[in-house]
Length: 352
Image (cartoon, rainbow, N blue to C red; front, side, top):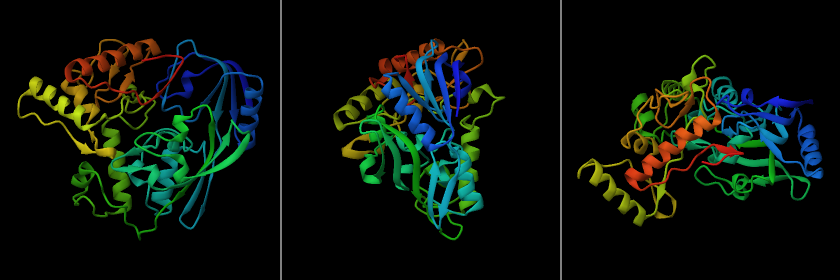
């Protein structure tokens, strides 16, 4: 376990933004994680957990407390049951399961930055697949009871980009995540996403070659600047900065009226069925149609040149620069369409 004081946090985030930590502890075992959390809680110190840093926006002032960097590694595979450490690099794990083990279930989540421990918190998903569909259990330290607990899938309260871990951010610290994968003789799970199906030349709902599915997702994400590259500032982001809005029937009717008033009577925004009778639409579509196109911005924080959902640090940006751009986009979309976009990354010491 390593402990540093007044340590910079920007290098631990994919945005490369954020001031220093009062105390930075890097834990390489579950016991070190639990011990650090217990000591911080006993002392009444503020505590910030960082895994891969791919979903964080940290204040330029930093964090005046203990920052716990989870750096546990490794996984165990028993048949098709996967048990992975929270600090394991997610994209590496997906690659190992698909390319080395030939197991399906997380192949459409290839290339997503961050750590395994963050996946249940956000219920990470992409291209028609979510981790909620394969997670069986999450082992976590419960700060309320002071015990390590195992939560079954049903106890995690998974929904779109949400979970009990996100709803109670100061309660659970994820230690391990267990998944039930599938051996389908080299085939993927059914292709749910139209863009992937078209690229692979299959119908939605069909299976395809497992490796081909993973490779296609990787290529698509890379083309959108969503695969981290230290030399490409267009990837210095948190991926999608805003979640796709889910509107109830009344909200959707008003939204559709605003769209057609602005863009013409035949304008049809993307629409997908959501839970509770709602309709999910595309944040990227809204941002673009509100006038914030790829590459938008004149300062060091700009919209990606590859994807309108990604806000990027072009080098030399501050967190304040990033948030100013995010507010401009959020407010512009609301003025145009009456929909308020919600940030996906966790904000630390700042507000949008």
